[in-house]
Amino acid sequence: MDSLITGAACALAAGDPLGALNLVALRDDPPALALRGVAMAQLGDLIRARALLKRAARGFGPREALAHARCVVAEAEVALAARDLAGPGSRLDAARKTLEAHGDRENAAFARYLDVRRLLLIGRVDDAEGRLADLDSSRFRPALRAALELTAAGVAMRRLRTNDARRAIARARRAAAEARIPALIAEAEATAALLEAPAAQRISRGKQRLLRLAEVETLLASEVLVVDACRRAVRQSGKAISLATRPVLFALARALAEAWPGDAPRDALLARAFGAREADESHRSRLRVEVGRLRALLRPLARLTATKGGFSLSPRGARAVAVLAPPVEGENAAVLALLSDGESWSSSALALALGTSQRTVQRALDALAAAGRARSLGRARARRWMSAPVPEFTTTLLLPAPLPAD
Image (cartoon, rainbow, N blue to C red; front, side, top):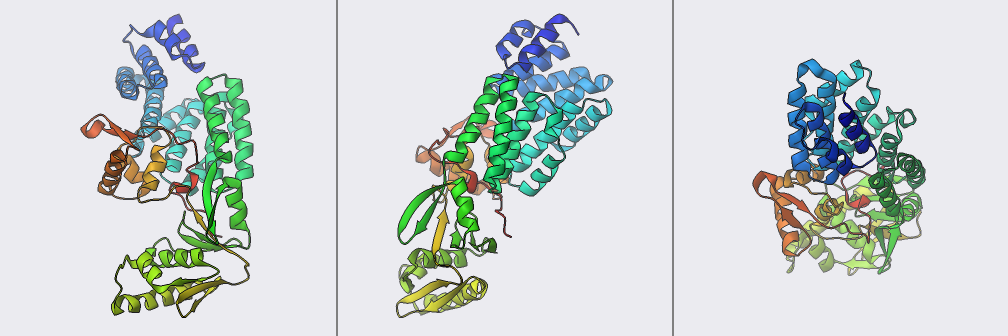
C-alpha cells in the first residue's frame, strides 16, 4: 500500500475526512475509491459514499476477497446511516465470514455490530441483546469499543435498566475520549443527555408530571397500578397484563385509570372506546360486554365495579393508580419519535421499524409535513424524511420494543 493510501486511512481513523480527501480525491483505483467513500460518509454525503464503495468493491473483485469484504461492510454501515433497514442480506454475512477467515476479527466484529444496530432500530431488542452479548468490547480499538458500549446503553435504556445504561455510557465516554474522534464524543454525550431528559409523563388524580427514565423504572417496579400507554399494558410490582392487541380494552382501562379514585361516566367511556358521540342501546350493550372482558383480564390486579354513573377501577394491593404516557401523544407520535433522531428516513424504513404499512406511514408523514414538523428531501425512491432533533424529551418509550413483562 502506498504512502498516500496509508495517510488517508490514518486520517479517516482519526476522524479527519477532509485530510483524507486531500490525499486521494483525484485517484480512481479501488483502495482510493474505498477511502473516498468512507470520507464522503463521514461528511454526510451518503448517496455518493455508497456509490464510491460499490465501485471499490467491484474493483477489488473476488481475487482480493479481504478488501472486497471490507468495502461491503463499509457500504452496510452507510446503508444503516441512511436508514436503509430492509436488511444487510447475505452479502454482509458473507463478508463477515470472509473477514473472520482472514483473521480480521475487528472488522468482522464491526459487521456483527451493524447487524445489532439494525435489530435495535426495528425493535428486535431480544435479538440485538443476544448478539451483542457475543461481542467482547474490551478486545477492540477505542472507536469500536465506544460504538459497542453506546449500543449496549441503547439496549439497557429500552429495557429500563438505567444503572446498566449509565455504566455503559461511562465506558463509551472513556473509549471515545481515547479515540479522540469528536463525532463519537458528541454521540456519547448526546446519549448521556437522554437519561436526564423527560422520558414519559405520569397522569394521576388529574395531574401530569414528567418523568426521567430512572423515575419510569422506579414507577414500574413499585406497587402502584400503572396503565402503561407506552406499551399498552397494565402493570404492578413487575407483573404485566398486555392489552397491545386489544385497543378497545386498553382505551377503557386508561379512561378508568385517569378517572381514579372516582368513576368514569358511561358516556365518557363510550366516547373513548368507540368514538360514539351519540350513544344508543347497542353501544351501551357493547360497553357492558367489553367491560366484562376487561374485568376478567384485570382480575389478578384490579376490580372493576359498576356505579350509578359508570364504572370505577379499584386496585388490589395497591394504594394508587397512575397512567404512564409518552411525553408527546397523538396519532403520529411514533413516526415523529423516529424522525427526531436527526437522521433521514425513507417511508419504507419507517414502516419496517414501526411494524405497519408504508401507506399508513406516508399518511402520517404528510400530516406531519403539513404541520411543519417534518420535511422531505429528494424524490421518488430517493425521497427521505427528517425532522430536527427534539431536545425536550427522549423518545425511548415511543420506539418499538416491548418493556419487560415479568
